[in-house]
Figure 1 (tube, helix red, strand yellow):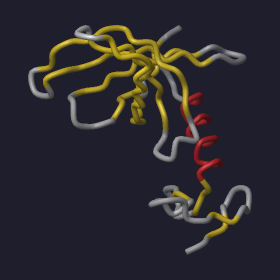
Figure 2 (tube, rainbow, N blue to C red):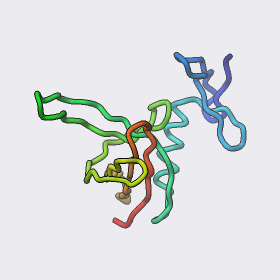
Figure 3 (cartoon, one colour):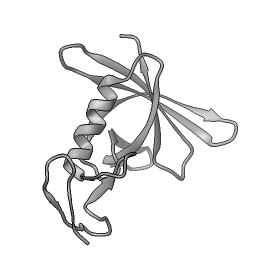
Figure 4 (cartoon, rainbow, N blue to C red):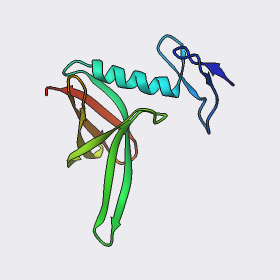
Length: 134
């Protein structure tokens, strides 16, 4: 099934298991590229203390024999058209999820923005993102 993007007019074609488009809160179909731009814009418009949810992408850079692995982390949207590097701050225990991992996200621009991000548990990719001062 094909659809035209409400924003750019591009024909959205199915890619792999996806439809090639997302649907906004008004029911408009939006291509993955425009969805990434909207996610970026909405993140930059957040006020201090506001929260949203994105996804955590973990990439193993190097495995060490008997010593774990070195990883890079990114915040991404579902289709992966929005992505930014995360800085690992700390890992800790969580009484229900078992583990919590804290990250810092910094966005440069006219006004640099900072976010505190937390991932809970082992079996999901949800990343809780909150705008902080800075």
